[in-house]
Length: 484
Ligand SMILES: [Zn+2]
Ligand SMILES: [Zn+2]
Ligand SMILES: [Zn+2]
Ligand SMILES: [Zn+2]
Image (cartoon, rainbow, N blue to C red; front, side):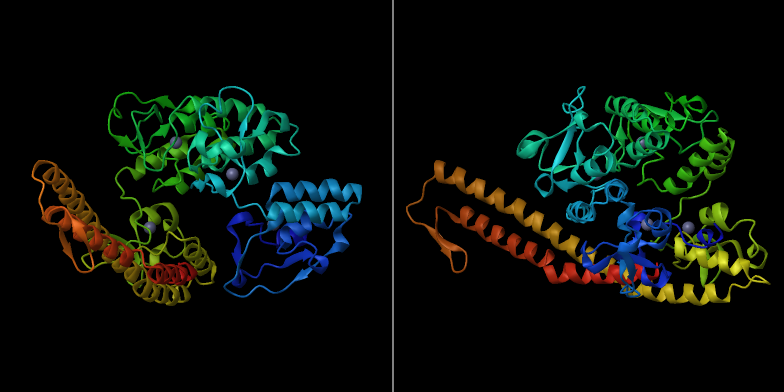
């Protein structure tokens, strides 16, 4: 028990890089290629399994390699349990390899219909409402659940029935909360009840919802609204519906982003307080926070801006939101030279990222508290920011200009082409028009001009979507994420 408390918890799909010092294990002799297990899961699930001797240390992680623990996949974890009990090692390696070959759930994003199998409920009208789950989620959450009969493979017609890009319902944050609560309680009816409620509401879109149903806290703080779907999938299973009220007055018309959508700026803060409210069955700390935050601008994260109000140090600026929700009341607060100072120059918040927060906590824990290491790292981070994010932004701006130019050329092209067609019908000409590099045989000058614009649009488009440009942006982003 003492040793287990010293091991970092499993980071599951998020993964960890080599600098975080996680110990890894793998099945012996490469029997499941690519599979790794973090030390926490090794202690919790492998050591008590008959297959424990079949796992060995894996030390090949480089400092920048990001590894995700595969035992966090429920299917593999279940297979380890069942096949372990049956003593069927070959069966385990076969099933684990098959699961690892299935593409990861697209989560909040979308995936091509052809990229994997998709499943839909056999019961109710879910299929008609477009409720689908990806192959990975089917393995992890349906197989071994006793509910296999409630789901069916949509088959090859999935693209024609549901569209070419699809969303996995179980990959959405809100449905995932309902699923997690149901699994923890061992009662999947909680999940089905939530899904039914959510399927009657508008999808909680990262771009916001128009004319949705909204709920708020009793004091109705500005800027806090939970959509109907999130009520059914998050507040209901967390037993928090009794604390919220329908918000009819303020939110009519316009597009509103749900406060607990992962794309919402304060999603993480609210999610943390929702968990607390659930555990204590008391919503007052969330209510107090939402009221306090109404007058504080949301953290702009990795976007620098001028004329902001800052806390912290000149080399490690902290925005009012991060100060209010994280650094306020900590050991280093008194020694901060900046306390709500407006600075005209462009600056960047350093305290939204988990890495910087960990460094800050370590600085506070020193005796006496000492920010010097934090400040050195923040300075390095700012340098990398200028070299990477600023450059990406410049390149995106150029690409956007090019794409804007392309769409203008495309519009001009179709305008001239249709003019040409009308002219050809109404005033046919005896001769044809042409130009080197564009082609010959055009009925009139307008048709030729249309073709010229069309060709220019294609050239500009190719330049903007140049693969080497995309590669460079990817590499710059990787460098930034490594220090972010
Ligand atoms: Zn793990
Ligand atoms: Zn999924
Ligand atoms: Zn929502
Ligand atoms: Zn911030």
